[in-house]
Image (cartoon, rainbow, N blue to C red; front, side, top):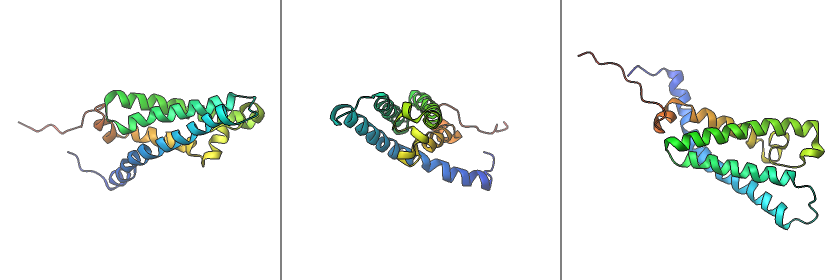
Length: 154
């Protein structure tokens, strides 16, 4: 195997544990946004505008879907997480921008102002997740990519 540079080793020490952090933080975010949506949908009185509620429920479903990929190391779960995180990233940007342009239309949802109500986790968490999923060692663990080995002369 080729020698690992000091810079690559440092990045590996940062990116590798991110998978464990994501496997814990995504279910927490799914639970918090899901409970918020259920509360607003079924228990909060006076709700007349349901778009923010549905967007929060959609976010919770997206977080839960991504969690499957972080928790189980299967080829199909890698693809599932990549799609979920791509969707989540797009929605965070679209709804985040839209919430500044027309705040009344978007209302208070998890993606409002790029996740302001949730400490901006909806903004940076999917980006961190995508970096982790496309990290070479992660792709090898999911069997998306084969480990590179040097040819041994006969």
